[in-house]
Image (tube, rainbow, N blue to C red; front, side, top):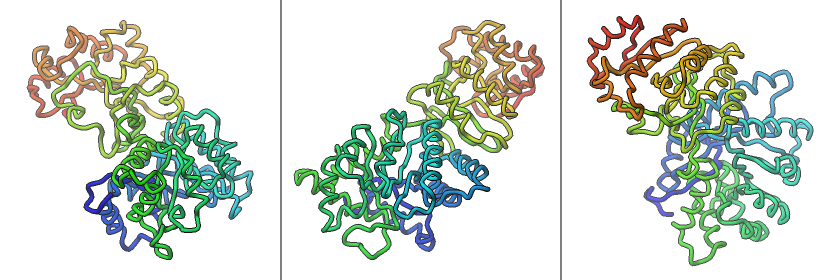
Length: 459
């Protein structure tokens, strides 16, 4: 890990949202990159800081998290509105985790009962959305481990961990990640260094907790993400002199990438994302077509969202994500995503029905090829779950369609025409679309849309 920005380092917990960084934030980020810190996760402590963290993450290509810190819980009369506001921030493109939440028995700003209730709400939210959970546990390590379920489907990061040997063994046996900070470098902190030696190398994260807890030799100064180097150097010493600083940093970077589901091996795609005034639902990355204009040919996402699924997300996760997030207040919920949603028709119908039951309008964006695997009645039943449908026409005829949108579906053009007729027959608000400069003859496509008595949108 050397200066010059050629290395990979991850400050897995850094409060860049605090006023300590208002005057020189850009320089702090630049300095961190010069020091080899390629990634930073900015946790929050309430709605205001969650908004600031999300803004910083989007501006500087970093990542953020949203939660109520146990010392910054909402007052009773504002709990519902504040909770909705916080969950809405989870719809921001680079907000990828729930945190930091947990218990704090050191300051005791709020009663243990209130802390436990809010901690439980955060656990359930993280589980419902599939987001990693960042846990604060000052003076309450044992209670935190008791409240965390034995089986969790999400990564858990125990930030600035201070548990004893027994609690640490319990945490790592449950595959939790352990965050270590500047105090690891303090000369008199042999106990913490002995504890860190017990943690498997693939479960350790480094974090600065900036602007707090600066490592040696920066004690007494404002902490910054660039100072991660001092913590990595101490970890390297604990792991053995044969370990290079570059290899140590890379292992710790990989750990954080996995913990926050950013690693190529476990990259989490956004299931619900915001675009304009609408929310979009992304339930699959599979598609029967290989359109020459498709953005999937060159990128894995859109406007800061990562949309390419490694595998289809589980039905339970898709439904619980829609249920957990505040979808009300948006123009509509569009089922589109990074693939063809009708390939998961049963799930698609359940999602649409759950959405409409909350008074939110629904739209289906489709290539119209589901008639190749659903009969006419099944297609009709599917369409009736939506308020509107947008169908990718893409061409003026079969030959042009096969050139622009080659498909694995035999007779794909005929299936598309059949779907359009079924959509028209249902009476659902329908339109067809074509992409400008895709190679389609726009004049002939407009004429075809008129014959089909369908509005045409040129994208």
